[in-house]
Amino acid sequence: MENTVQITVVDREGVEHNLEAPTDMNMNMMELCKSYELPVEGICGGMAMCATCHMYILSDHHLPERSEDEEAMLDQAFFVRNNSRLGCQIKLADSLDGLKVQLAIVGA
Amino acid sequence: MTLLRTNPGNRGFSSGSGYALNHKETLIFARNSHTTSMIETDILLIGAGPCGLFTVFEAGLLKLHCHLIDALPQPGGQLTEIYPKKPIYDIPGYPEVLAGDLIEQLMKQAEPFKPGFTLGERAEKVEKSDDGMWLVTTTKGTVHKAPVVAIAGGLGCFEPRKPPIANLDEFEDKGIEYIVRDPNFYKGKRVIISGGGDSALDWSIFLANGIAEEVTLVHRSKSFRGHPDSVQKVIDMSASGKIKLLTESEVIGVSGNGVLNSVKVLHLPEGESEIQTDHWLPLFGLSPKLGPLADWGLSIDKNSIEVNTFDYSTNIPGIYAIGDINTYPGKLKLILCGFHEATLMVQSAFKRIYPDKNYVLKYTTVNGVQGF
Image 1 (cartoon, each protein chain N blue to C red):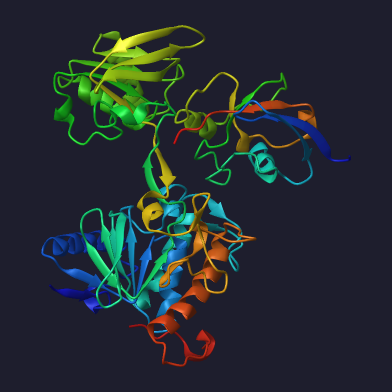
Image 2 (cartoon, rainbow over the protein chains, first blue to last red):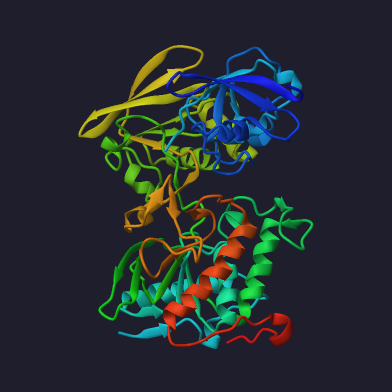
């Protein structure tokens, strides 16, 4: 489909979800997960202020660097790894076709 | 028992005096509460965010008084607490407005109706009085009485963010603390602090200066995002051996026998160690929780309060929920939707408070705004 890429999200139980992600709706990975009703809260609405959309990038896609805000928020997240990102900071784009991510465990 | 209404002129606020006066008000309320006084109002709002503040205005048009309780020390909810400098673009009539400025404008709009505030106190308990009114008590024991309670709690109360470690609660207040209440509590103790922000840095420095016997700071990366002075101080104190610094590390387990006696630390990229300690302070900032509201008997779905969209009433007659904290089919968590909900809610509240009075909607363009 035009303006759509394929993205795989592995949930916290290890189940893979293959999602069709629109690239013309100004959406990010947090919003994509929410739109498919995957267990991503996105409490702050996408301002990199809650870390409830913490996810790991499993594929070798090249993503834009983390911003200062994202780094600061990851300091307050748990089980942060080198491939950790906040989903809300990853904009859906054509270059993300085939992206694979895994949802991180989120603190209470 | 002294009864205080929320509308005496000398306890209102003025836009010029800002929030400082409100802080004073809270102190007055808190003090009064200890002498068994009670705050009485028409609509008791739990939450002083944009939705709660706009309710004051809409209720005021119907001659209803409001009093607001908020766990935060200032009005505005997440707008002033989390993102005061962020622009908002979807408030009708404002092509762009900073969150903090919107709150200031809402405070100004509410001002003629002299709302009362209990700030820095969390609404804890609700019960029915003998005369059918609601009694809401805060964490500090302040009692509020009203025929109508409207929960405008947004995301909930901000509480310390807890690490996802299975047996964490076993050691809470038995070696694990999320807030430093009294530094002397750690005198002569071994303390591990986690986090990379200002509070983790500041407490590490403070406790390592002759209070704790041993301070270990554990942080997930090599760099810190706290104040540069504090970062430098921690690095210096690490070099001189006063603080043990473990970067690229994370506490992943806790153990003990009734009280905490060790934590398991993961060192990236690999390797684990067990560190003996008396205390662990995970300082990872705050996150919103529904808190005690979850125990009020309200119908709850996924951390939100279910309401009837006719008037945003909950399953408990006399208790309403508006704004981000409620849910219904088609719900959108937008400030502008919260304003709409507040407006419909006060109409229903009016009928509940004055069942025999007839009321017709009046326009501010015709009547202006007549304050209290």
